Image 1 (tube, rainbow, N blue to C red):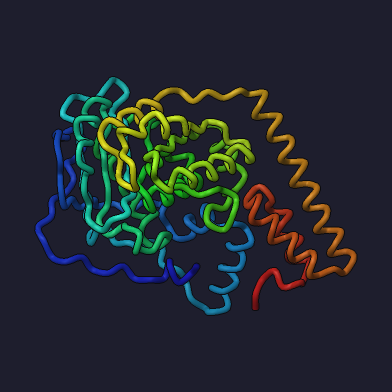
Image 2: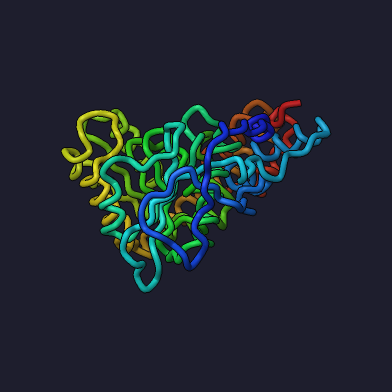
Length: 356
């Protein structure tokens, strides 16, 4: 994990670039090869690790760094070397400002998918997507920081409604978008997941610190949509099931079936009609039953408490292997919800939770 953050960003091929339009001078239409000048404090390496790693994985990473005597670069990407595509709707923003969709691509170039511009115009959505952020790039070292950089710069330069800032993506980009939404619910109010997703509560998408996950449960709206014959439909089902099991209820996967014809039969980026239905769903207020969420959280907390008690009992009984297995299971299932108790038990255990 650490080496992904330590990897140096490769220099882009030389070319003509333009700076993003300054605030108050926004123009509509497509802007290509744009330089965004500011990084984001939320993409600092220490903050990325805190939000996107499980407590035990974070502790192990910190131990490895301390042992090596190395330090992570505060920012893993240099804004001056990055390029983005931006689409600004042709009409004026609404009273509260534009909506914003930060799009994580599976491909390497920065592009606006075909047929999306009229939909973005209709819903008043700015679109921004980075170059060199595809599936072959490092997730923590490039793909996530570039998404956060895009959000920070666009919200600085354009009038954007902070209640309608979304993260999205296609295929592998959608999987990264879900991870960003989970770790940054204070930035993104929703996620648009086109033909790509993962279950949360595991090594790929660990649960973030408690205060962030409670906000994710409270305020993040997720929309999944895939073609009827796309293998991602099964991935969507597994992801939705994991959400429900962890008390995340503002999840809309019905759009997958209702837009199947518009998306197409195979694994391909959504057509304009499918995007329109997904955006319409995403922008609708998410329906949550307060009593249902409270009851679900109570059940989850009881489950966590029982698992922690089992791990402590194993430690006290000298059953190191059993304790190690339980602690790793707790970390995978509950992540930040289990801290700091899970960390304290791991330190007491001396059973190989942390590798040398």
